[in-house]
Image 1 (tube, rainbow, N blue to C red):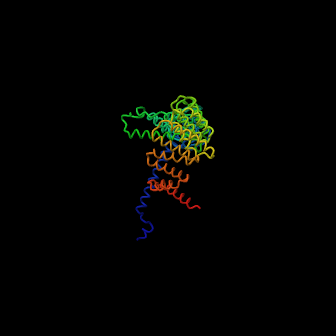
Image 2 (image 1 turned 180 degrees about the horizontal axis):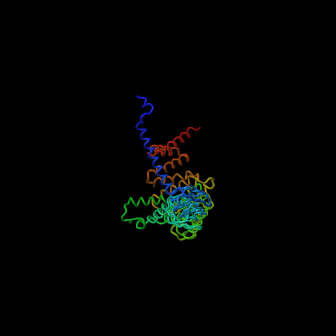
Image 3 (image 1 turned 90 degrees about the vertical axis):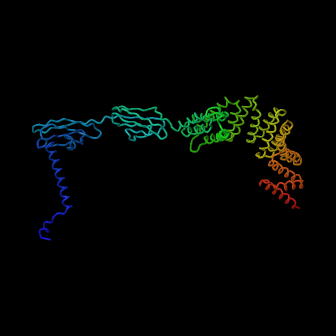
Length: 513
């Protein structure tokens, strides 16, 4: 290594590259400056630019020269395009001629950008409003300070159709978009289902619920009523929604019938759920629903299908008194209806549910007078209804009154013709009515008679258990033991369990001194 190389080292390759790059940048800067100075500034006079308000950007021949107020010096004679720009103000463009040595003065009063306002009010509320693709807010929306001129307006909401248009904003005016209703896509789907399958009750229930949760109570009530009409109308496989009964398989028909039964059972539960819907004030809905059903009931009170459905809804809500009123109204309105016995039986049952034994007795007396000698089936059915509700009465006297009425109507019903199986069922009900009245010995031959006429093995075993209990309570130990021993070999676990329990009770009784 020589002394020269130490004092004046030879540049490396990377250093040479940097030196070349800096040289190019310097050349570009010098050229640009030369162009700017030569083409714009030159070496002559200047322009003083002012504006109200100040702070406007000043462009000379497209080049930014500063912000007002500004003195631009060193311009050569000639023509110049001057432009002033400031946010929220209209731009100003001027053509300026410069000559001589005097400075040119420009003073401009800027005009604010012309703006207008917009009001958007659509159904439903809380829809997004976009102006030129940017979110401006949610409906109902009132917004001011929009630049004049054409804009793209878009209103949208999830599950609803969109609304869009090209609007013109005029200075000092308000563009209004009122009365616009976005189509509910879910609602359209549900309404389409009803049009396609008008006999499917579930569609009415679902649509009524959708109206309800969206606070459209009038529409919800109306749709619930349509659902009730569908329930009351028998399925017509040759009608709307079906291809025709002849084209349907038995399994398809059975499926539709099962769905109808399930929907009919679901309907009163849905009504009750909506009467006291969690987290919602349902007072208005309940009032509208009651009014609608009352209006409908006045029209349809003669129709048993309507009466039955209406009363069942009230029973589901445990409004037994209102249900009884519906049955009574039907009895008065349709005294010659073939379903009148059913109305009396239903009235007896709902009065038993309510525990109003005086009312039961009054209804029974009218019913018995009408059918004592001509309707054995209704008489026997009334006996079973009364027996079924004996256990629900808390007071012993009320229980005995029901049992007395039951015995009376069963004895009358057994005097009229009926088939053997129905007869054995009614004889058993009579035997149990007498047994529950503590006339045990009197019930034994009647229970034996019912067993003799019973064909179904399971029914026989159940009735034999009752007979064995009656024998045990009457003191016929041997007869009770024989029945229990026979029944403890039953294939049915509950029968074996009851028989073994009966044997234990007898043995415990024998062990007592």
